[in-house]
Image (tube, rainbow, N blue to C red; front, side, top):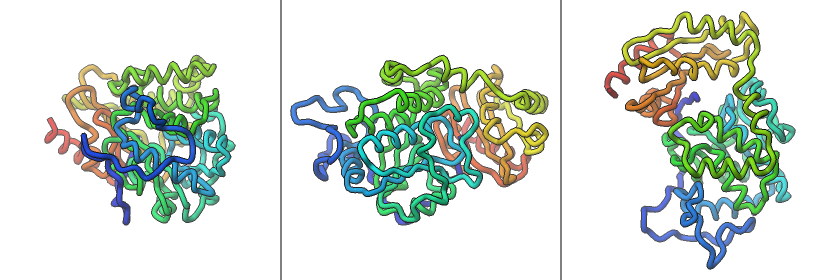
Length: 373
């Protein structure tokens, strides 16, 4: 996860009301049946996304119902949660009869190889074909406006910008926020939106949502894994998806060049007290024709060092910037450190972009790490 913060322009987020306060209702949603009189509330059922005010869900359905075209976007260099959540919702919106455009704002528009197996990629459009000033735009898993890349300008011009996310560092840069830091993945909120649209889950939607759920929970190993996450997995698996095939695609395959690059990167790994870190250069990748997205998982190898509380991997992208991935095990809040450095993320998993050399990048990180411990 990498991120670079920006100040939102002329955006007023809709915060959830204080506990116990009355929630104003903007009216009845035109799609789905999210709240029927006399039925238990989502909160009483312990449904995911209940940290979000009910009126925000209702207003989202209103806006979708009124829109001629619904524009969807996820963050650049999309991971399984970002792309899976967006594709699942794109399919559900198509089922309701809505015209949908879905994209992500990378200069080199391409789905990462590890996600080539995801269904419904025919619903994707290139950034050049995205509406210039969307009537209703929904973002998925993007913690800041800048994380939308080429589509950040489109988001600024959108009449209504709905932000669906679970990152605690998200400032709420849209006109409407569906942000729940307690959700294990953005896919949790995407499933809730699909439910409220009144669209039954099929195997294709479930596959995309399951990929989002398992990638962001580390295959249910992270602390974010809750009973609700397992219950959601059960609902998705019940549609008939192949969990063994999904696991093989995500974790059990890689090009030979990845092994060579991994060997070079581990050769230069450094252990400094509670910190373990290393870096991947463009040259490392170019030697073996390895695209940037293939080295995303190296942080999960480096973080295994027993002696280290914090792991850092710097990855040089094709433009020469360093995308910095961080992980923590127990006591350190790397999310706060990365936010201070212009990025964001979660308490135990976060990132940011640095345009400084490796030594200077690590010096700044070490300084903040010392202050945090």
